[in-house]
Image (tube, rainbow, N blue to C red; front, side, top):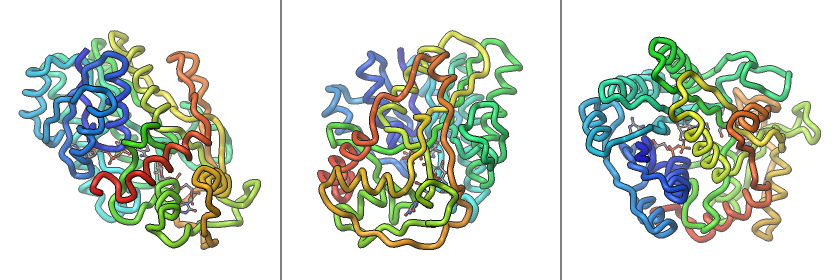
Length: 337
Ligand code: NAD
Ligand code: UD1
């Protein structure tokens, strides 16, 4: 099967391409490079022996998307392309809605024209409303609090409406919890621009000496050790979740929604300790005030994905840290080194 992977030059999309190739699919990457790296193509080829077709284009370029769907005889689409920085989305809401919502609309309309009817979409746990009722399951209340989160929820609703309008569509939204880790080869991983917003890439940059110390945002949360608790998922498990979703959804019409998480909550201090073990150092850290907008604790109920897709996480916290360390220490400056 030929799979169009929008955003396939990014962190999760590129690693999913490796897993797609390993499973016998043929990924075709379309990416505007607004946050992706062409260097991933060399790395994918190094790992899998195959170089995916790469098209530098914006998913909002309807004519180009139609042409790519036709030329490459695409059977299904995995739609990773999107902007993902929560703080930036608050400052630039129009840009976020245009890229994430309009981008998805243009893609769906191009797919309709060509008759490609299977779409797997990157959604996020950030669509859920704040609650203390854990774990979060697919029916938990929705209530995204940022333009980024609302853009994901808007697209999920569009997928539902389109699936309801025409029974030949198969629309799947995957709600990721906190993706971390790298390909175990150490050749591919997360390469954020500037100062990382997220915990794991920040810790990794402290470990290689690019940042002096981790600031732990809050030590007075109602959690076992007072620091924030999240559901971290190895990016390889996440990639495999896409394959499971694709196998399930292709040829199965309707609107499907799945959490992709481990079901286990880990604190900032748990992550710091595990990473310290992986890299053999005690990592410098200090406590700082809570970060605005942060929740104390959330984690997934991944039971639906296990029951329906036959998927659940396989990789441990130790693997998340060892693989990230392998990637970061081999590529201290990311793909540009
Ligand atoms: P990423 O930024 O590494 O990858 C996204 C890719 O999409 C980039 O390569 C970027 O160049 C490309 N892109 C963005 N807008 C585009 C457009 N209009 N046309 C074509 N290409 C475009 O991010 P990632 O971490 O790999 O995330 C992939 C998807 O998963 C995103 O939609 C993100 O919102 C979602 N997601 C990510 C996380 C996370 O923590 N990483 C969590 C939940 C959901
Ligand atoms: C962030 C996004 C969320 C996205 C998720 C995916 C925000 C507000 N939310 O959530 O939309 O879906 O990433 O991975 O950006 N921490 C520190 N020091 C740091 C960085 C983080 O202590 O330098 C703490 C945070 O307070 C939090 C935990 O580490 O308790 C995880 O933070 P982060 O990796 O940013 O993820 P989320 O906050 O879950």
